[in-house]
Length: 36
Image 1 (tube, helix red, strand yellow):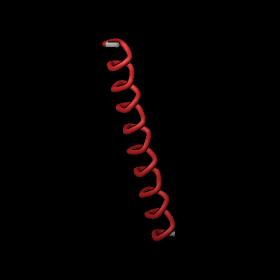
Image 2 (cartoon, one colour; image 1 turned 30 degrees about the vertical axis):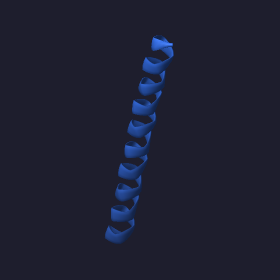
Image 3 (tube, one colour; image 1 turned 180 degrees about the vertical axis):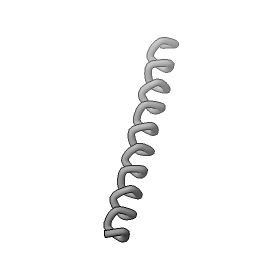
Image 4 (cartoon, rainbow, N blue to C red; image 1 turned 60 degrees about the vertical axis):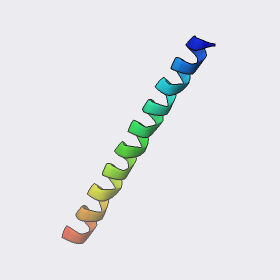
């Protein structure tokens, strides 16, 4: 049970990082569009 919980929190961390990267990419895209 303990291992599963740590795996789960690891997964959540990875998902949050992916979401953050996605937002960063969107921001860059918006800036590129407004600059163009």
